[in-house]
Length: 382
Ligand SMILES: C[S@@+](CC[C@H](N)C(=O)[O-])C[C@H]1O[C@@H](n2cnc3c(N)ncnc32)[C@H](O)[C@@H]1O
Ligand code: SF4
Ligand code: SF4
View: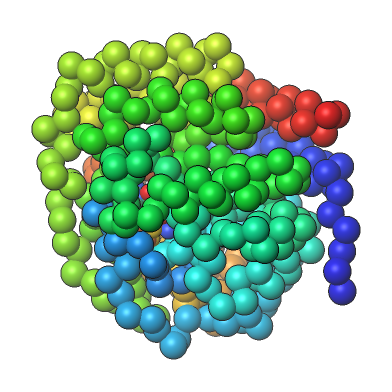
């Protein structure tokens, strides 16, 4: 049965989720939740790597190197998982990533099913498959947002880092196909690497001048952070590559200028989603990935992350062992399990840099959240 997704309904869901975020993040800060083995509050963000299959060959990620795995969950399995999450979490957000999510068979049905359950749904995509027909299906599916990976407005830089000569043209055409269709928010995710350090402000300018909803700057990590697993949780692709071509070779003189410019742009109202604190830490990291001030920061994912792999395995940390499987057990049981407790203990003493990834850097940025709501409200009134 098709369902009508009105702007108003999506707006109300977003607003409800936004207020739950503020409440959870404040409560977690107040009780210093990341210091405890058990989490009194439920997670609000579920990130689901729906498939490891990919049609790009990015230099920074080896997801594309894995063979298709017949053990990946299918549409009916995902419906069960989504129902279970919904009855446990109420209003929450699920972000589908991968691999390339739109390569997944029945992806649109999965998206429509989740949206139909009043879940705030997002997708991270390389944009390679979004022609007009798919754009139309996406915008009528009820999903909240698509975030496109775009590393530079210089096609040669983008294509080099994304491992495909066609990637820039494809992602720009995907943005054009979805832009102006109204309901789906569009954002950019730019992985910050040596090659694009001078292109970041231009990307923020592009987002603002084209009426897109936001940009997320993602610090480059060792490729081994984005590894692939099999259904038993074993890593299937050897973690190749240290920091891609040596982050330490970044032109460090420019880093300060670029990040001060981004912070100034954010303060002027450009839709940069990273909190200012995060931008400062990223610039510190680019200058010296081993800066002791970064490893001294607590990794706050313990009470917040709920990550699913293509087989339904659950992780809190994307590189550690799974703590359960949502097809075998209820998610709330996994969240409160002994394995989860032990893993939170390990997380507390971990000092890796990946706490700086967008999905792991868990700080409340009330001003940005309010600005995002205002932008949504303005768009509804147009
Ligand atoms: C793994 S991809 C999956 C979704 C989709 N295939 C895409 O590229 O948008 C998710 C995000 O991770 C980013 N990424 C890739 N390699 C990375 C690395 N080594 N460190 C940090 N982020 C990385 C990508 O640029 C993309 O924005
Ligand atoms: S970053 Fe995305 S598009 Fe690139 S190889 Fe990894 S999963 Fe594929
Ligand atoms: S820093 Fe956090 S996200 Fe990274 S490996 Fe350690 S526990 Fe996991």
